[in-house]
Length: 395
Image (cartoon, rainbow, N blue to C red; front, top):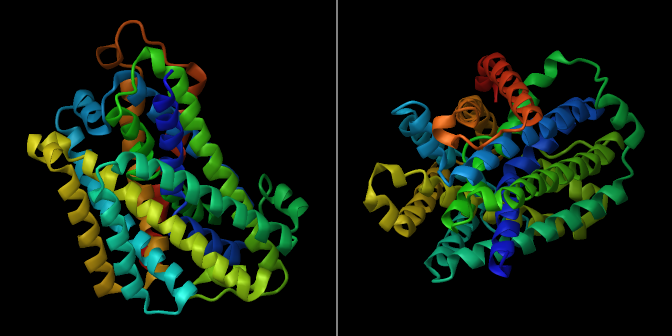
């Protein structure tokens, strides 16, 4: 495989991972760790397993067929792809409001300036990236560099906070109560593979022309790499915050994860978190805008030809909504839950396609173990979504 293709595969994995490792990822983990303590380990482990089932099935089908998510949906059932596109774009807009909220919070931590103003500045930076002629390469490189910075800094906090790792390991399979874990679990899944994130990496590969039987192995490895990066970050962040909470500290409700870094490392840690949060936010803004725009291609050639304009409009709209609404921490938790509600639909579309010879061809064989894993992910996320709907107003 050419070096450019390898770079794109790595970039796709990081695009998915950094899209998932957004401000919502950080805030949700902090909020739920404060609420559930060591028992939150169960929701984290379950969400990682479900993430693998969702992502590997999705990437494999997209990677083999070379079709985007909405095109697969329309082949499963005419019009279904259109519905999926509408839901993904709406969910992407909601997610990007949260992403920009996180960007504003990150720069607020660093410079102490108005959160809404800093969100607007971050939006302008994202727009400048997409105005570049080499936007694709820049997106890949930014995702890799900022993703690495985030992971390193979170590991430092984890080591410093001295979390009760043994208790967390036990709680990951034997929590105090399984029932109360449904809302945090669906919120975590929604935040890491819900909505547009499910398709971020796969669509990036399709856009780069990497698809078909000859690339299937690399596509599968890339998808697994993205989920592993996200899963490790989730575990490291949980343990870092658990150490802080277990020491008796109460997180600031206005910026929960930032206060955790501050308790662990003092003022320096607080400023470092500003870098982490902004890095997570800006990469997620890029991923949400880019992937959501690719879902509009099916509405006509104009949308494909003016993709850059649509991406910029997407970012501008999200910024305006956040500037008018505010309440960033609440937005970040809520959008993860909303995107989690979309996940069962996207999963069932992919699972039907995976067993359809009309879509996949006569020669394709979908691994049985992977299909079973996907069905399990669908059933759990569907149940969790249904049982969690009534809890959303409380967020």
